[in-house]
Figure 1 (cartoon, rainbow, N blue to C red):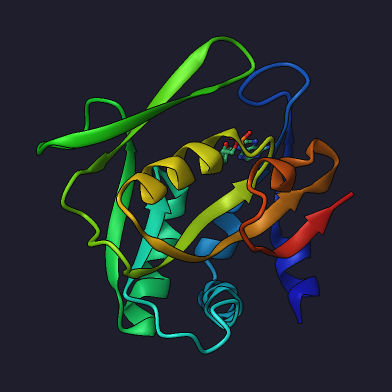
Figure 2 (tube, rainbow, N blue to C red):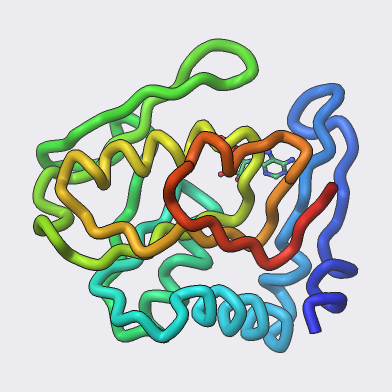
Length: 173
Ligand code: AMP
């Protein structure tokens, strides 16, 4: 089934900078059947576990995470780039190819022990997701898993997320 998702993803060479092959997921979003299939598959990664809140990562992660949250009857929580959240925040920095970046989470977003599914569009080096995990752990979340539509396996991102469970719908070797 996910063959149709895979063939819809557009590889954009040298975006946003030379050497990067950007996985453009907008052709999935614009097709009702494919978007629904992607949400079905991401929801299945919860394995029937009751999820209290789905956490999405700025910005494409929000699209998938919010739809998954609605489908699972869970709340939605945004992890945002620094300076976007209005209330009191926790923050974590992570390395990008050039320099560092910072993500933030509202301090009252999660109660200790709540069951959380972390969702993003794509796992590359794992730095962004690892920063989000750090924030969730600081708040005492019960992280059920990290679910992404696309995993670039050759970048070994899931190693940074150990011992947490990582589910990916489409893998690229
Ligand atoms: P990383 O922290 O290296 O795992 O990068 C993951 C984040 O960067 C995700 O939120 C993706 O949206 C974005 N990203 C990284 N590499 C790509 C790529 N090749 N195509 C599309 N998005 C990417």
